[in-house]
Length: 154
Image (cartoon, rainbow, N blue to C red):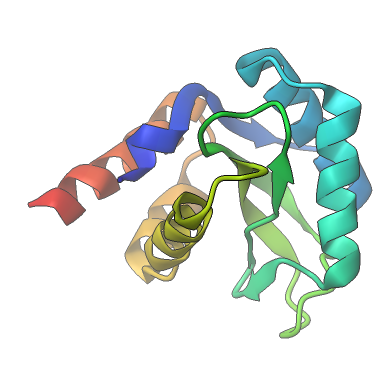
C-alpha cells in the first residue's frame, strides 16, 4: 500500500480562510462526499466523535483526523494544506497547517492501521513537510505526495 492507493488527486486541496477545526472538518466532509460519494453529515459526525476522544494532531503542525465510515469498502484519504494554521488542541500547542484525513470501512481491519502508519511515516519526514508547505497548488501537493510513494517503493 502507498499513498496513491488511498489518495485521489481530486482529494488534495489548499485552503485559506479556515478559522477553526470545526470548519476544517466540514470542508473535508463535504469534499469526501463529493469525491467518494459519502454522506457529508455522517463523515463530519464520525470525525468529530473521533476528535472528542483526543486530538488527532501529531505535533509539528500536522494532524491526521481519521474515522470509520459505514459506506466505505476501502480506506480513502484527503489531504489539506491550510494557508493559515489553526488551533487543533495539539499536545505540542502548535497550530496545524498540514492535514491528512483518513476514512476507513467500519470492518476495515488492519488496512486502517496500515494506512495510518503510512501517512504518519510520510508526514514525519521534514523534507516532505517543507515541500508541502512551500506549495499551494493541489497538483503540486499531489505530486509531492505521489513522489513520496514512488521513493518509498524504490
